Each structure stands twice: as structure tokens, then as C-alpha cells.
Image 1: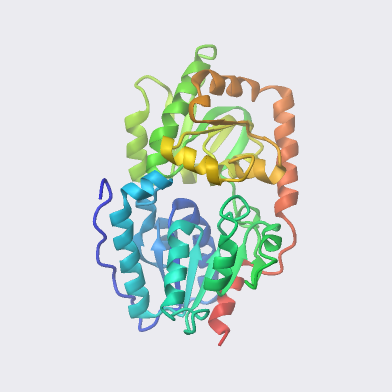
Image 2 (image 1 turned 90 degrees about the vertical axis):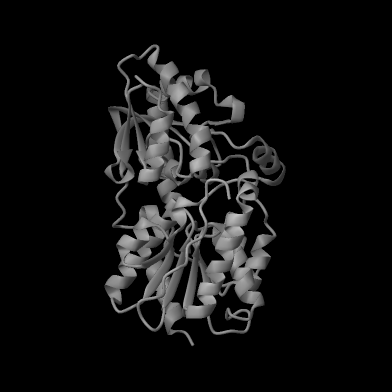
Length: 387
């Protein structure tokens, strides 16, 4: 199973019943689901919530059955290489659900695994849509508006409800029978504190993502761009944020000796004057913090060409997609050269780029702050009351 270890036996729930099972396959989903769980348990502390997720969900009060964030991968080729592991993981998750019968299964993002789980529960007649009693709902929709648009009809067949975080996504599912609610974007929730800030005198921020395979491909490109930039700015320093100790250890093996890059836990955040980032969730955090910069992305060659043939969007970055323009210029594969990225760090500190970042951040807030009649925790809690 390559570097992924065998799937261990999952623990039993502490109580006789499980009210909610959360399945979040990566760091961003774990973090966003944890805020929903924490608020829900504050309102209803007696709920029994179990989770296949990560440390954030455990800290929020969920029983962590297995740390999914340590085994998340991205890309067609990478998934194929780990097929045996994910097949076993899938089987064990289904067996746990069948054995302990949670009242609600909440799938969070991570469609490669989560939509398979929804499909299996449907065809086994376990989910409500499949004729059973268990409600199977989805929080943070797969980006069907970007690729594999046909999945929205499969989701309508397999799922009981969907909670989306972008206002326009309700319209994406308008031609299906699936109940869809806009529950607000996590980054605009009142208690959300963006750990990133713009500071004209700050460091350079390097964000290669949270998935091990992607980090090992992207981080070297970011470091090369930063090293090239330092040829004309020798006093420049950089900060890289990491979400887990395991990822920190990987990052440490990649940073060249003598290059001033501080590795810092994500929760500590950073004040930065420019950023080089992958196209993940953190790129949207950077955009909302008004930090100018660029996106660099390197995928496995096979994965890249397969995605290029299937994905029908002009940009990878969420901010770029929402704005319909490149707030962050995107440098993919070999285009993410040291010279190109160093040039972006240079131009990101011009007055025009700084002003444009502020304008774009304001527009993003407007796009994401459409009124929502329900919160994620209220949306999830309603399925416990429904018959």
C-alpha cells in the first residue's frame, strides 16, 4: 500500500447510539466541520458525534474513529497507487456504519470517497433515499460546476440533503430534486478569525498545501521562486504554515540548508507582504486577507493531463473562479519556474497590486456574504428532529 499503512480496527462508540457521524477526508474539511460540531455540541451537549476526520474534529468534541487527514491524497495517479488502501478503508467505514447505525451521516467535501459512501448506503437500502431510516447529507459540495457536472444528478439520487458554502451553488442544483441550502461560507462566520494578515513589512508566505504528495511537488517550486527573489532581496525571509507534525517533518526535509524559511503551525498564522500558494483552501484565506501573490501548482504528469481533458474551468484558484479573473496569476507545471515566481513576488509589492488585492478582497466578501437563513449547525441539527 505504498507509504499508507493498513487500516486499523475502528473503536466502538462510547454510547449505545450515534447521533451523527462526520466523514471529512482532509485538513480543510476537518477544520470547517469542527466549527460546526463545536457550535452544535454547545447547543446540544448530550449529542453523540463520531468522526472519521482529524485533530480539529477531535478537539471539537467528536469521537475520532480514524485520522483521515493523515492519508488524504490528490490526483488520479496517486489514488490508483493507493487503491488497495482506500478499498480497505472504504469497506471498514461501511461496516462501521452498518454496525452502529448513526442517525445522520454527514459527508464533508472529499467527493472521491464520500460520494462512493453515499452511493453504497443508497444501494444497500440503508440511507433514507435508498429506503432506509438513516439520513445521509453532504456539507461543502463537490465542485460540480467545475467538472463532472453529471454528478449533481447522482447526488440527487443518493443524498437526502446538501449544504453549500457558495451562494451560486443553489442554482447549480436547480434542475435536480435535491434539497439544497446555502449555509454561509465558513470564512465569513462571525467567530472565524483569519490567521493571515497583510503587512507591507511582513515576510514572504509560502503555502504548498496540506496533502503530502502535492506538498512534495509544489514546495520545491515555491522555495526556488523565493531563493531567486532573494538574489535581489537578500534580507527577505519566508514563513511556511503546516497543519500537522507529520507535514512539518516532510517540509523540513525539503527546505535547503541556509534558506531562511520558518516553519510555523497553522494556528499561529502569519503577517505577510506577498504569497506563493497552491490552489487549495488557504489561497482563499490569503485573498480575503488582501495578500497579493500568485498560485503555483504541480501535479503528477499523468494526473495533470487527465485533469486538463476533464476540467472545464478557466482557473484553479477559488478566488479567481469567484472573481472570474486572475487575482492570483496561476503558474502550472513547468510554468512555475523560479524566475516566474520571483517576478510575481516582486510585482506583488507594487502599489497597483496592493490596491487591486484590497479591491478584490472586498468583492470576494460581497460574493460570499449573501444572506443565509440557516447556519451549518442548525442545518445539520434539523435532520435529528425529522422523522
